[in-house]
Length: 171
Image 1 (tube, rainbow, N blue to C red):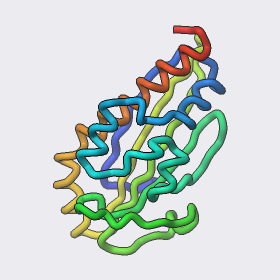
Image 2 (cartoon, one colour):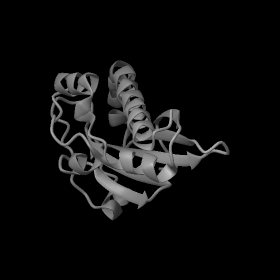
Image 3 (cartoon, helix red, strand yellow):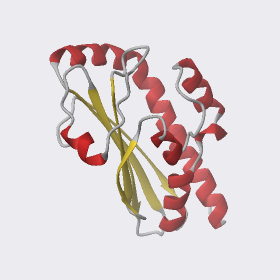
């Protein structure tokens, strides 16, 4: 999404082969994290399938997958409400979706090889609100939720690092 209202980005360096890091990130189940389980319960989000494939069952769409460089996922809804009205769409429909009252969120996980053999893993989330009212409501919601959203992403990166390095025998 080249245009967006909100952006958040986090990264970590992982001392493992890029293929291992990608594979771990692509299949990692966040239920392994007590923090993530707790935050999802507080927000009343599904506690099942807290991996990329599972997330597609409750509204996320895989927008691109270029192993082992990057994958991109998206979600459309009214995130600031108790019932966010998540929209189930195809990748093409995600790009074209422009209904007022909704916001589109796109996130990625990129894997950048480093000269020392490690991999810089970067995740970025961009949110585009589709009208002034949703933008205003989302910004108020984001003030409250952004620290917790950041915690989830940092935890995701930490677990990727921990698992990939353990699998590769490097730390």
